Length: 378
Image 1 (cartoon, one colour):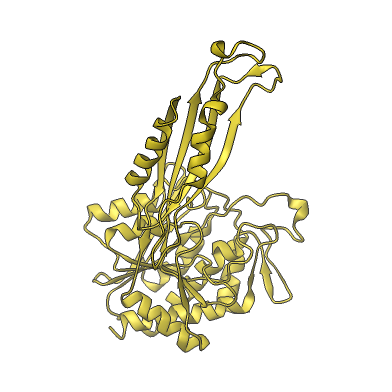
Image 2 (cartoon, rainbow, N blue to C red; image 1 turned 180 degrees about the vertical axis):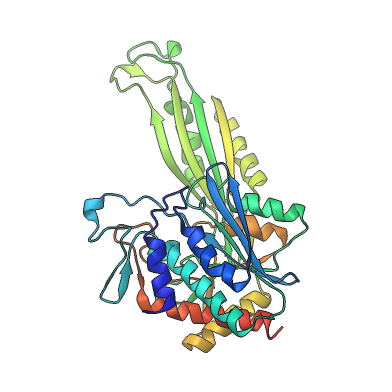
């Protein structure tokens, strides 16, 4: 059993459902500290964070990621205990196998091998880990980045081990992500009997449906060469008392926009309020910006990752900004080159989550080669 596979299995045994770390970071500390990594345990609220680094000069290369996982879902739907790793037909099963304990394991074993061979490497290797990526993400990576900024510590290159690959390890690099803007809209009406005269009740759905339909059909932008057009989706729509003879007094709608660098959150908010204002109904709206879009068009990190993948696997990766978002949204605004490079993303968050056993060693080798390119060749 390879060191990377063994470590991945140890991590899966930790039931680290957000925001619990369940011992994952202490396990990783036990591997990093003997190598000479300086360790900082950073606790904010109930979130466990880790900042660890080897070296004390620029440039700083950072492996970033999360030790928390999403809930298991129905246990009877799993073919094996989600927190007891099991290998079947060349696949490692367990909650977090691909998102992202497999990537974490490869990061650490790559660092172990690299530091053992290059104890006097240039620059700094760092780890930024949190137990709050799958949750609210308010006491995790963003807090560590804020702390580092107060020290004038800025990461030059950051690699997140999120499952970015499509069919085989390294075929896709995420070099950016769309921004995410959430809204909670409350449309105010007047509750009353269903048979009451129209002027004594006001149905919030009837008054707002045209505006809601316009939001659903609006073309927000055309995207650009790196991002698809902005998307709009209503995720929740609630109204009514449950009775068949009562006009509801309020309508609640939650919606999300995933937007590219072609737009700003402020521009989106202005456009939405303009559409709503034209509807001639009373409303209240609350906004939550989960993250701004970020993009690493080029740079040393992307070049090093592409070279490493080509050398280890023989093929050239494609670049993508698709999918959801990641903690890279908190790191990129500081001027850091950020990419995501990890296992094949075919079972993340699913029942019977898995990662290919051979993928882990390939990933380990790619990570080692990236370190050599940036901290030896540069």
